[in-house]
Image 1 (spheres, rainbow, N blue to C red):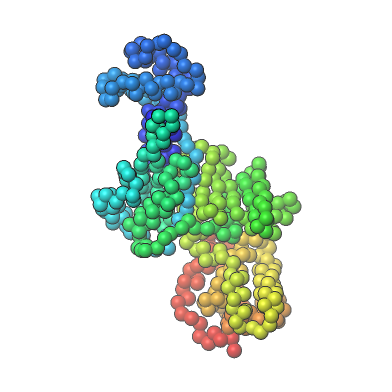
Image 2 (spheres, one colour; image 1 turned 90 degrees about the vertical axis):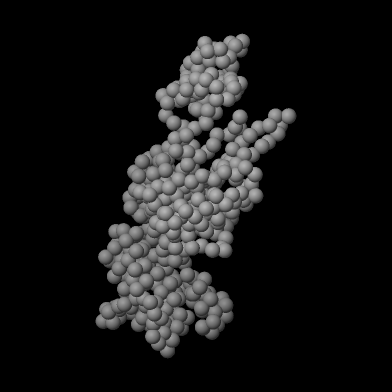
Length: 467
């Protein structure tokens, strides 16, 4: 008898064990099954179980019948008949998120490689391990399930628990999810082997240990600004590494309205987000959380379908694919300052802080973006471009309007730190603001527009010495 239900999500495909079916029934249906078993002689009627004992009592009656006999099949058909009258039970959801920065194979090639993996009897040093897979050509998705038994002994009783670890690979999105239900899935060591092996099998990834992706503060902020569908239901802030503040939001509101409230604005403006919970598909009952530090998504709402997860992954895949635009490059700028300007470490740090403050203040003055998401995206993009010497095309007659709005020392120091000429600095910033003007209502479109502009810069800029 299984101690725990299977906790399957992607690979269940409507299949439930006899134990799960019995456990999902209500008292009236247990009564019906009891009297059915009594009438058929499957039980002797000498005892009527307490409410909480009913599933176990009926399961023992089922197991007492010889396997695959007409009697056991008759009993199971009756269980199935009663189970079909109720809504199928659903479990919560918990998965680690992996982004694959390598080329993914096409569906047929990936399928052949997985079949070869299974045929090779790769057991991952787990006795009795079974591997199954399912392909969905319309979605270009593959599900893989790893199953093994876990035995535990208590007072001479051998209890069997089935461990299931599922992996869903989105070949088009370069994303994989690994189910991570505590106690129901395999050990962390085994799961690491599973995900590394599968991603090596379906992509060009080789000899690399892959870990869940960390979602930055800015990535989480971008998600709750993307479309009005992702209405925030909870925000968690890390307060300088000392404690956490959870804010539950009990009414529907978008981020712009939310951060205008002083109680939330204080934390939103000052501290990084580590976790968000959002309502998906405009459904107040369907909630999903993203833990940026752990790189996982989870839900306790017990009402999500695989299609809900698929839709959500499509949204975050855009953020993962262009995550370099979500990164704060202050540390990299600090390292450049250490080598390229003269002064004490404290002076250099103050200079970099002032540069960031002045640049972001100017971007805010041009965008009036109270969410901060667009300001950070433009700022991150600017410093990425300067770090990588990728200067966006600009009109030399227009960028000069920016120059007068900065303290001369800001641009002078930034030129010396990055070794990029001041006109290229100003021109790139002007180009980014022009992209914002054309995409200011959609952070996704702006992200893609900036990415495309940067991608088209294939060569280092000439004479980027800043001299």
